Amino acid sequence: MSTVEGAGQREEGEYGRAAKRLKTEERETEAEEKEEGEEELEEGEDSDSGSLPGNGESAADNRARWSASQYGAGRRDNGEDSHRISPSPVVHVRGLCEAVVEADLIDALEKFGPICYVMMMPFKRQALVEFSAVESADRCVSCGAKEPVYIAGQQAYFNYSTSKRITRPTNADNPNSGNKVLLLSIQNPLYPITTDVLYTVCNPIGSVLRIVIFKRNGIQAMVEFESVQCAQKAKAALNGADIYAGCCTLKIEYARPTRLNVIKNDNESWDYTKPYLVRRDRGKGRQRQAILGEHPSSYTDNGYGPPCPLLPLPGNSRYKLSSVDVPDMVSYPLPQSSSSYSGHAPSSVAMVSGLHPSKMNCTRIFNLFCLYGNIEKVKFMKSVPGTALVEMGDEYAVDRAITHLNSIKVFGKRLNVCVSKQHAVIPSQVFELEDGSSSYKDFAMTRNNRFSSAGQASKNIIQPPSAVLHYYNVPPCISQDHLLRLCTEHDVPGFVKFKMFDAKPSSKTISGLLEFDSKTEAVEVLTVLNHYQIRIPNGSNPYTLKLCFSTSSHL
Image 1 (cartoon, helix red, strand yellow):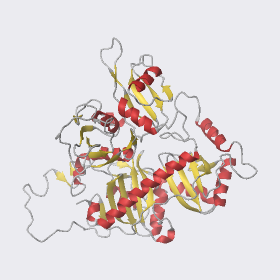
Image 2 (spheres, helix red, strand yellow):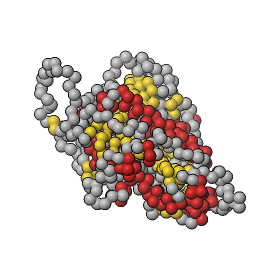
Image 3 (cartoon, rainbow, N blue to C red):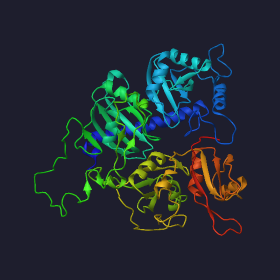
Image 4 (cartoon, rainbow, N blue to C red):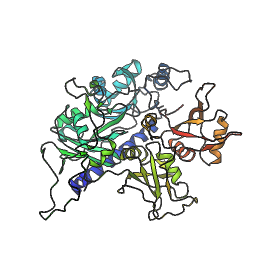
C-alpha cells in the first residue's frame, strides 16, 4: 500500500484535489498571459544575457525595446497606460533573474504598499504580485515606467494584469486561516526527492513536523510546519528556488489540509514527532517466513551499494539564511536503489492515454518521450484504445516525462501521462495499429536513446515543450526549403522562422532553430520528424535528423 493510500481515502482525496487545483491555476495563468499579449522573455536564458547567437542585439537592447513597447508612449493624461489595460491590484512582473525567490519580490515591492499574494513562474522568470489595493499596484507600475526598479539586483518590468485577483488553490493564503501545511510541486526533478531532501531544505527555515511525498502529475509533496508563521516564512524563502542547480525547482502554494496523517516513516512520508513510527501489522496471526531472510546480503539502508556523491545545495543567499542554517551538502541514493523508497518499487513504466488512434504509433511515442530519458519498450494496450505503456530507463525519467508532457496536445488530443502500476512492459497481445505498424516495439538497443551514458546524458537540456525546436545532425547541403518540403511531405505544420547556426567550414553537420506558430505545432513536428533519416546523393549512410525543444521561446 502506498504512502498516500495508507494515509486514508480522505487524505488522498485532498492531495488529489490540491494537485488538480494547482494545474487549473497554471492553465489560468497561461491564458492570462495570452490576453496581456506581452512578448515573453526567452525561456532558459538569463534575462540579462544576449539574444540568440547572431541576431546582433544585446540584452540592453532587448530590455529597452520591451520597455518602450510597454511604456514608450508614456502614461496618458487620463491615467490609462499604453496597453489600455484597466488598473488592477495584480501586477505582472517580467525580466526576473534566475535566482529570484518570492522573498526578493516582497522585499523590493512592499514599499509600494501591502502585498497579499505572490505567484512565481520560475521557468518563465516572471511573477504575479497582488497588492491589497489598486493604488499600490498603480504606484508600482508608474514607478517602473519612469525609473528602473531592481529585484534581486536585476531590473524588472511591470504592467497591470488582466486579472483582478490571483487564483488561489485554497483560501489558506489568508494569514488568519491557521494553515501551516504547504503544497510543494517539484518541477524538472532530475534527482530523487525524498523526505530527507525536503527536510534538509525546509527545516532550517521553520520547524517541520511531517512530510508526505506523492506522485500524480509529477512529484509533489505536502510539508507540515510547526506554525503558520513558519509556513509563511518557508514559502517566501523557497518559492521559485532550485533544490539542485538548474533543476528540482520548487513551486509552493498553501495546501488545503491543516494536518498530515502519516502512518510510516520512510523516504516518501515521515512524522518527525514520532521518530520510531513503523508500519502497523495487519494482524497478530502467524507471519509468512521469508525464504532468503530480511534482505539481500549486499543491501544497506541506502539500497544496493554506496550512496551517490554528495551534491551541493544552492547558495545560502537564495534561501535568505545564514551560513550556519543550511548544510552545504545533501546525499541521494543511486537510481538502482529506488526500490527501497517504499513498500513497493516506484515504477519505471509510464501510462499514456489520449493518443490519436491513427497518427500515433510506437516510434512516434519514442520520438517524443526520448527527450526525458531512455526508452526501453513501448506497447499499445488492446483493451484500452488510445493508451500505451512506455517503459523508460528508471522512475526518474518517468517523473520528468510526466512533468513536461502531461496535458499537452498532440494531433488535437490531450495526453494524460501518469505512473503505471506495471513495473515492466511485456510483449503480449501484439496487434496491428491503424497505420499498419506493430503495437509493440523494443527500443533498448537503438542508438537514438540520448541518456545511455553519463557523458551523453549531461549534454541533454531538459526542457518543457516550446514553440521553438532545435535541430541538429543535419547535412550542410540541406536548406530552409528542404526542411519546409519535409514538413509538407509528412503533413505537419511548417515553421514560420528559421535560423541556422554558424558552423566551421570543416563541419560535417549543421544545426539551428525552427520557430512555429504554437507549441502544439512544434510538438507534432517533433513527434513525426525526430530521427528522420535524411539521405543525400552519393552518400553512403543517411543522416539522422535530431530535434529537441529549444530554451528560447521565440526567434
